[in-house]
Figure 1 (cartoon, rainbow, N blue to C red):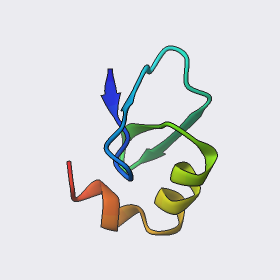
Figure 2: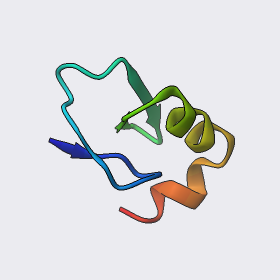
Figure 3: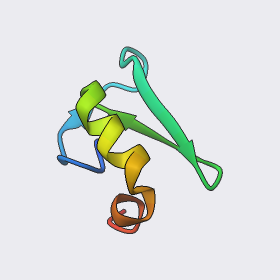
Length: 49
């Protein structure tokens, strides 16, 4: 399980449809809204992990 960097919810990497890659790392999201928030300000959320 991965942790959604926006809301900290646990996400199953194998089944989520919401992913993005930032600086060579793949991030997994629970929803399109969390992915959108990350995509708008990736450094704000990527620094959390």
